Length: 113
Length: 112
Image (cartoon, rainbow over all chains, first blue to last red):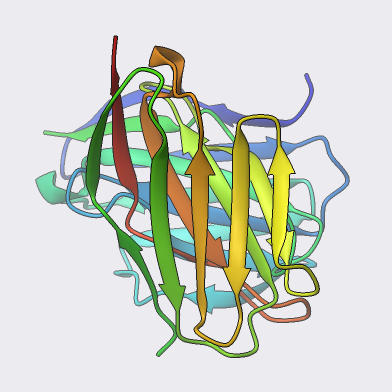
């Protein structure tokens, strides 16, 4: 696999479930991101990790919990979500946290029932 | 806080016409300005970018202009084709900074 991959591609979960989204980049980049994309906010930054350290949390509710074990992997742990959290979740990576092109994954389409 | 405003939110043009999308940014430290294209059901992908040491950059039918004094930059697409139909996002960031700020996107329709 090349570029940025995300699994699963589709996820349906109940409000009481716990699930995780996974992102992996094969580009040797040092920064990784989570974005939420919905009709209301086309590209909403959630978290930024630079060299495995979280450098940005854009006032995201605690029911979203990111984890970055190394520069190539990024997770988003989900628990007790709300229906309004249904959206496309995009992962991206770049050479550094700012000033460089971002490479996006295909996204995970999340539906909360 | 830092902000990038993008206009228009929707743009409809006839095939062969030109399309222009404009963005303004607030952080004077910004020095990198990429444009991303997102086709329906696909991921956003970079189509062109410009750094603050140049005022214009072209790549075939696509060009970007930057006015640092006015803090604004624009995407120009000439001889539009139906496959140019997509959502376009502008963004601004600074080398050594901590995040990229995206505009709200422009949905471009090219009518055949």
